[in-house]
Length: 110
Length: 116
Image 1 (cartoon, chains in turn red, green):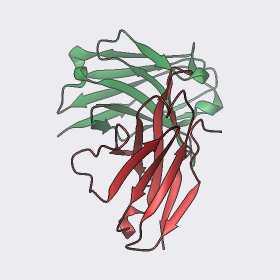
Image 2: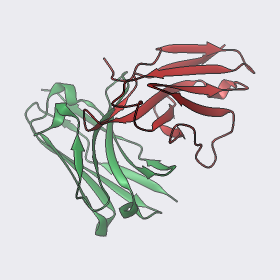
Image 3: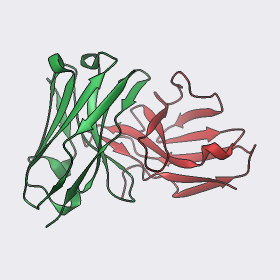
């Protein structure tokens, strides 16, 4: 049972816009930054979004992040087949004094 | 090239010990917080521990407190994880990570299998 809650799966067709949610609490998302990672099978995760809505250099602007209260979302617009991967949200948790991840969302491009 | 390379993963018996290493190159790792994150087979990511730039602050997930110790040697651009009293549930790929302010580097991971 992960501290941050994500849907286990999401799907969309090429060109579509998809959003992945991440629900937390006042001790994590409510007071700290949210990060999003993309992971392909057998490879290390890659940072997609930091500080709620900032994109690292090289990440396409098709990826965007938002946060409201104790929830956050990752949006992917203009969906492509190469976006098929697992996506994880993460945040620092003040109550646990540790970093927490969501359980991950497997994105399928139909 | 900016990279992190982990080493030290292997098969170990329950109750045993292991030390993982992570070597940084292509960037100044001493400028960043560094972490260990693990992923059990077929499961999601789990943060294990992290350490401040100068080693003055360290944090651990509850399940490894008292058993694992994170450390770093900035002169050698290296991060370590000493793992004692290993359990079957510690079986995972262990990644090291360095980052902050949008900079984020991950290693390729090293597999730790705890089994008799």
